Length: 113
Length: 112
Image (cartoon, rainbow over the protein chains, first blue to last red):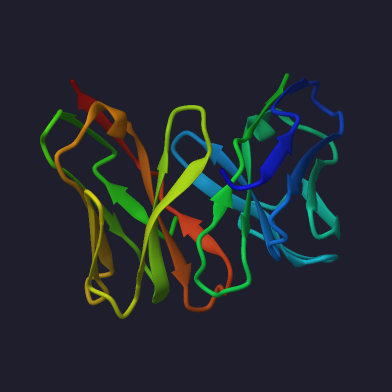
């Protein structure tokens, strides 16, 4: 398994509360990604990072922010969680080479009630 | 909208049969990748085919790519119950650099 750890793995939170999901990698890969997976939508990219403090939006970035202060950590924050953000969140990493394989973490199940 | 669209959405076969899944996409790509996801787990990379390649093999997997039709197929030969999973295609578009765009997946069930 790729050295990717997501935390927490499961969380239930209330609407309106802030939530931070953490992704930690031990591979020293440059690129890190946050995806969400929902029935009928497949995986959709939320934000990604191409280096420390270098991040960019994906296709479903509204309501989410990210930070990458170290190569190994990529944080996803829901500033004020909503029920529509109930989902499974996957962190992924890839190396520098273009067209490279992406390695996924095991997922974080988030329920917003 | 999703770049890649898999077909069929669900496929049920008997052990030993071959399984074929298709993926269509919309824009020019650098490469196309197939991933597998077991229930409750993360995705695992299976195979990558570049835009200048037409066919690639890996064990029981065979992938084809037709850039003129913007489509790819994944063939799993001599399927096993352990092949039961969801299969996703993902495209790396020419203009998107490091980003992959995933389809919605095909749920494959292999019955013993």
